Amino acid sequence: MLEVKNVTKQFGGVVANKNVTFSFEVGQIVGLIGPNGAGKSTMFNMISAIFPPTTGTISFNGKMINELPTYQMATIGISRTFQNLQVFKNMTVLENVMIGQHIHSKTGILRAALLSPKAKKEEKRVYEAAMEQLAIVGMDAFFDHKAGSLPLGKLRLLELARALATRPQLLLLDEIAAGLNHKETLEMSQLIEKIKDMGVTVFVVEHDMDLVMNICEKIIVLDQGEKIAEGSPKEIQNNEKVITAYLGAETEEEERVI
Ligand code: ADP
Ligand code: MG
Image (cartoon, rainbow, N blue to C red; front, side, top):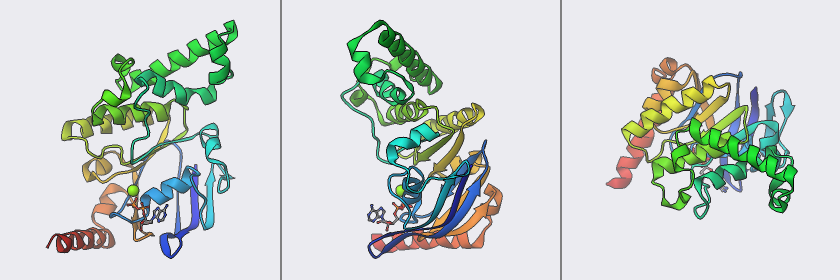
């Protein structure tokens, strides 16, 4: 489904990803982990066409997507959430999800506003589909709440519903459990598994190791831009390079505190 081949991304003098190669098949939950600054978000930004790789190729379902415009990602079947939430705080929960649906609607927002019978019918379909996504993440009861009034845990669920609204084949989740408590993280794990069972392939960047180790079938590890390991949760937990990378990162943090 996804093939990343010899991908390097440079920002001026900073090499955020260095000659990274990996691939995965449809129908699984794959993890992308690594210490802060390892290049995880940069990799997600390239896969979701926020910017292209400096060198190397990214292919989705056998098609090169390096130069695809960002707005076409949803059309080809890739959707994502962001590390920093991207919800519209002044809109209701339902409106936030309906915005995401309109790429699959023939009429679009402007024609729907004219309220021709055809547009009304289309808008009803978009509404029902949005409510369906909200029900999947357990947020349907909050449909008329302003997004800005929700606590973080609910905002993350809303962001997830919005990403699902474009009916992706591949869903990228960048630190979807950041800031969630233990119970919310557990519920998020179960939800991600449910989404996989619906037939969506999920690629997660996550710091919560329990979540990653429990739900991922395969894990890719980056450190300072380079892939240092790839394998099952068990293989990754016992990998010397991975242990060293994480211990190194912790020591640096301790030194900084001192
Ligand atoms: P991670 O998500 O693993 O914490 P990032 O991909 O955010 O890591 O960052 C990797 C490196 O690339 C960091 O040194 C970061 O400062 C740099 N970087 C990321 N995005 C940009 C950008 N848009 N412009 C310049 N440097 C960036
Ligand atoms: Mg990041």
